[in-house]
Every structure is written in C-alpha cells, then in structure tokens.
Length: 105
Image 1 (cartoon, one colour):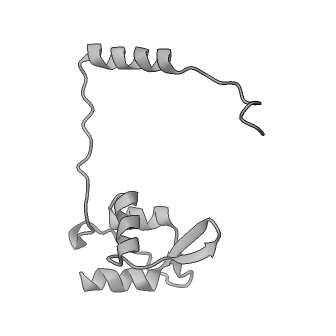
Image 2 (cartoon, rainbow, N blue to C red; image 1 turned 90 degrees about the vertical axis):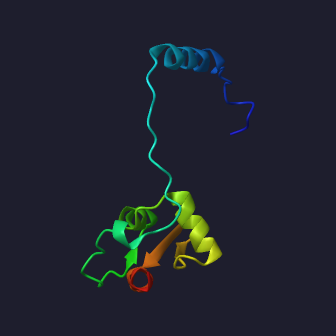
C-alpha cells in the first residue's frame, strides 16, 4: 500500500484538546522511578522447572524488574546475559544463563 492510498489525519486539534484538559485539571501523573540496573533484592523467582529452558523478553522483564530499554542496553553492552535468536524477529533467554547471572550478583 502506497502512502498516497492512506488518508492523512490531522491530530493537532485532538492533541490541543488533551493538552488543555491536562493543564486545567491540575492532576499530575506520578511516574515510577527509572530502574537503571538489576538488583538482587528486586528479582522475582525464576520458574522451578528448567525443562522448557527459554524465557521471552516479557517474562524476563517480569522477573528482573527492570525496564525494557535498560535490559536491552545491558544485553548489548554485555552487562546482562545474551539472548538466543529463535527467528528473524524473536529472541529468548536461557533460564540457565539467567540463573547464573542472578547468582553472580
């Protein structure tokens, strides 16, 4: 599908309405503090059964309690365990590598 085939939408009015509403309501959204690294005290338990052996990124992030961007940056720099490529667009982590990483903390 070419770009010419898709209708263009103008979201500026919607954005302006949302910005005005948030400014007049006076409500502030408290954001969670950004976690820069994995700490042993914040790690949840890994699955006891190692028979399947791999965890998806969402599962790893649930266990490690760190943001996606920080985890991927740490993997790239070598601070966190390397992933295993399952397909062109899918990666996973070995549970044994994650357990070794947690033990090293």
